[in-house]
Image (cartoon, rainbow over all chains, first blue to last red; front, side, top):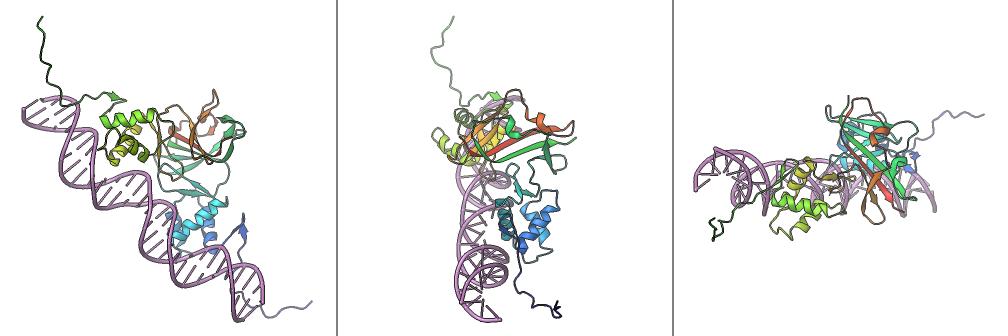
Length: 141
Length: 141
DNA sequence: TATTAAATTAGAATCATTCCTAATTAGATC
DNA sequence: GATCTAATTAGGAATGATTCTAATTTAATA
């Protein structure tokens, strides 16, 4: 078997794998990777500030673009509390969000085992549910 | 018994009853009364347009003030869908909201009898819940 | 009736988000 | 590798719901 001594010419272009049909550009990767390691439900601006460390030239518009693309392709979730800036999380399990007024922090809320939210809602049969959002506000014990 | 022939001087000021400790000014009355008879979950601007018929000089800022005051005093509820303009409803029963993508309309969603939302959430004991919001998006059958 | 506090108004300001457009980049094809 | 085309990005301007501010009006009370 012949060995290549010289490395092949390095590509000038990068190869971007897809996630859920979304091409993962460098910017999208960074946004996604950051959210994966974050449990704090950051805002677009939080993401922007953090990602500038790795990509100093990234623009806020791009962060919004990336977040929207990732949301559209069901890679991350967008979370809204009243009219506050949107927050984002990479937890795709069905869950709600609890806004702790004491600390200002947001926590994922699971459902008790074996329960689906739709079980308890009084909806006409054959209703198509595309998305459910459940948010709570109060004080964690 | 002596009869007053002349009517007493008419008051130049109005008397305003309270609801839940909130003084019901003319503007607040109109806002509240409109919402009582509306099932469409109107936005602040919807309210504004409609109320100008009765109070041509009312300002949009006042509508916002009234809505906020009514919400604060638990006379009406504020409903948010993603980042769309807030909507308001006078239904105080615990219920969710279904946004029908086909028609653009919003419908109240009740829980099945005997079920409380908190029953199915996995929250630490002694958690204080001040507010729950549950919103759905999809197509009604 | 006079005083004081609350509510209203109109318009300016805010600010998260979206839009626009030119420049760049990636991927496909030659 | 060169070229073409479409997607992506960056930066700045625009948008629009909401909030703020200052001045005026109104209501409650002394």
